[in-house]
Length: 268
Image 1 (cartoon, rainbow, N blue to C red):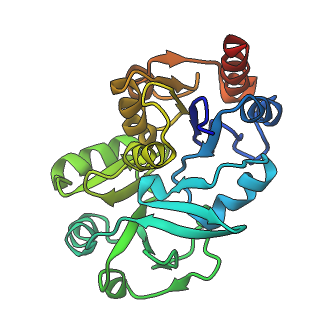
Image 2: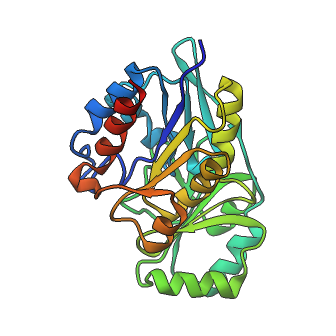
Image 3: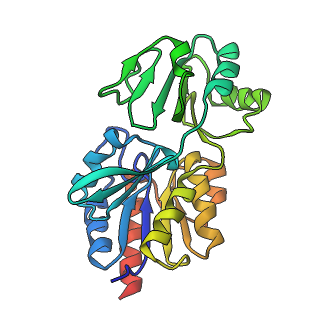
């Protein structure tokens, strides 16, 4: 039976707090939406290795998970997760341009297999099975994602850098700090979710997405163009809030739970 709608949720800053505990009421609200017949899935910038725990913690029953800002979509078959759709690109040109301007930055790539290669350790990276390599090895093969971190630069520095470099052949998002996340051109959470929606046969206007970061702007636009709902968390940057159709409370105040319980109540 086709689900009554698709609900796609960001993780960091939407479902969880900075200490990785759940936003107030989030677990119960996700269960209510799931039990009401909606297809609830996660759509995150995290790799699958850093996402799987939340699928289990929240009791997510969807057979799909969108990771790496849409470049990787996982599908569950027979209790096992497989990489159902993976987008890759040649990171050489963009990495070479960035390294000229940010020689001290830390660089990481995620291969199509999920393995991560990195130039230097960083606490925020999930590197299980990863491998430290010389910079030159990062550009030797196709990747699904590039991450650049330069702690001595701030968000405005990165915005200027992006403007100067002209990242026209990739999709990028600037994080809360000096964190630049780069995906294949034209790929974002929305492109992956459209693939999942079509596979499940859910009507395009029966979609709700929620997030708090610049990497959620693509899925906001996708949902709104098709008549769905796009929810920004209360603490989101102005440009993210402007891209959304609705704004809920801060993640620390249980803003997501408010939206999800409201969806269930309206459906009764």
